[in-house]
Length: 235
Image 1 (cartoon, rainbow, N blue to C red):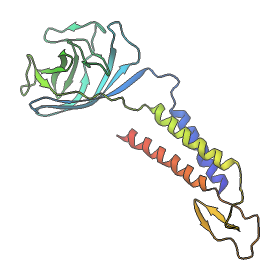
Image 2 (cartoon, one colour; image 1 turned 45 degrees about the horizontal axis):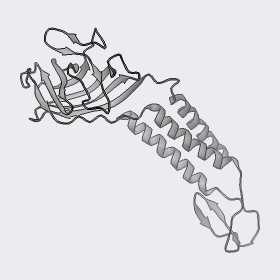
Image 3 (tube, helix red, strand yellow; image 1 turned 180 degrees about the horizontal axis):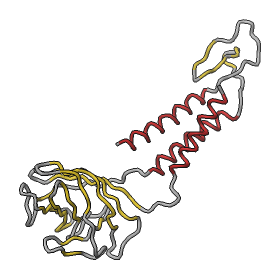
Image 4 (cartoon, rainbow, N blue to C red; image 1 turned 120 degrees about the horizontal axis):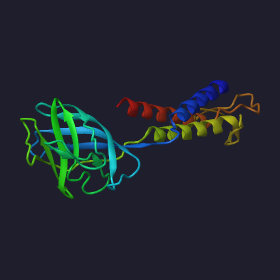
């Protein structure tokens, strides 16, 4: 029983350590908004560099997600060949720079991406005023469709989930390594296993092995952390 538990903890530690990156070089943010007329809804993730660029924002490395609405589809970032300076392709001016937690989240050149065979440019004209310009016949090119507020909370990195696993595994390992103890309640020696107490043997013999109450709780914590990580990764 003890060996099996230690083996489970060992593999949990190995998995968690494998998820901790040597050095992070990107940040991921939710990228969700809708046009005021409810024609388009954008749901996605923006990945940015982790260092400020010369403009004072963060270069967008990629966008994944979906434009929902007529002619919508999967999102793909259009690379800015002049990064971080704004680039004019003849129809749109964009720089693909993100300002997480700021107002606005994108500047006037904005972010340029494609979806469903159409081009889209999300840009701002003020701290809380955004437009989605597109060549989608169901949208609007100039000035574009007014956009409701954008959400951009940080998405937990693999390293965050890994530290949760390491924490739970460490608790379990610490619990296991101290060995069996005795527990005496109301003058009777009782056996403890996974948090449940049972009456002591009728012969009253001492030295009854105690299964750690914390072991069950620690292993449950470890398994819950692993399940949470798997759910996040699958999503």
